[in-house]
Every structure is written in structure tokens, then in C-alpha cells.
Length: 107
Image (cartoon, rainbow, N blue to C red):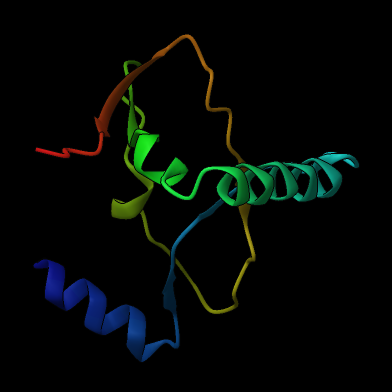
């Protein structure tokens, strides 16, 4: 049976695709730490207006070595939204982290 036939049949019986959402547990002091960071940054920017030009902006991606499927490709078909969530563990030793950064070029 083709993939489009399977989807058509699932929709016929009122099933819908749902994607899992990753969440990170927040600690009680996280809100205070974010406010403290903002205050520090605002003070530094007031003291040195070009401060933001001396920061390396970066991003990272994690790839699981054990073969777990990327969540963007996972759909769960059901007739009700299950509101499933999976806690994300970003420092799992079975992952490969790839990092890239951009720094100000003043030339």
C-alpha cells in the first residue's frame, strides 16, 4: 500500500499526525539568572557601546550516535492529541555536538 493511501485512510478515520515536542526542565532560579544576565549585559553596553561587536554568536546541533530518529521526521497518528513531551538531555555522551560561530569582521 502506498504512503499516500495510508495517509488517506488514516484521515478517513479521523486520525491526525502529531509531532513530539522536546522540553527542557526549568529550575526555580532560572528566571532570576536570566534577569541577572540581562542586567549585566545592559551595564556592559552602557559602559562600552561597541560591546556587542566583540561577542561571537554561535549555534550547535546534536546528532545521536545510537541511531535515534530525528524528531522532525517523527509523526504519531491518533484520533486525539496525546500532548506527548520528551525531556531533552543535551549533554548525553551518546551524541555528537557540532558547533559553529560567527565573530564580528571589522575590516
